[in-house]
Image 1 (cartoon, rainbow, N blue to C red):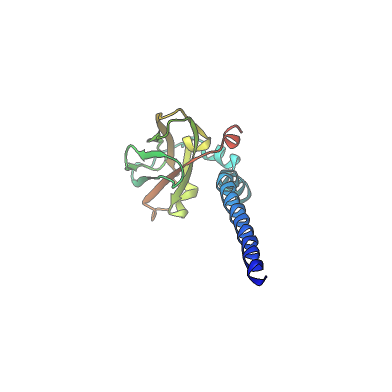
Image 2: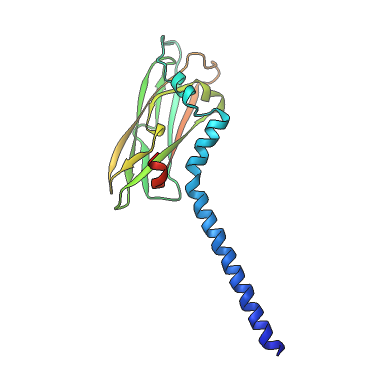
Length: 186
């Protein structure tokens, strides 16, 4: 009698563990798709990526500091989820603060179905973030891609003349992520 009870309790324990693992997997999957809206909410709360700041940042420069050069490096990362080929056309530029420049990235949807992608930028060093002004960027909104489509994506930017002299190198990095259709529709 004791031997029959043990296998039944073991079966119940296994079913319980299986349910818990399924819930964990489903929660992880939902969290992965919630990252883009969570990032947007974080931007609103912290002020980074705030629409008012973007409008202020898009104001055109009025003068160029031709006596100074800043090395701007372009970096792209491919996420572990999704099938993307994503890279900058040029890996760096030498720029004058106050002058408007344009950089191009190439993105290719490597799967045979349409998808929507969102690029998430980061700027290093962090002290340079407030001086790096994007007037136009593919990262401002989700980008639709047809099946196996390759596109050039542009970012127009300038370095504010007020950036401290000791910052002479800036890295602009992007990561490309698939966006769920519900987020892409917004």
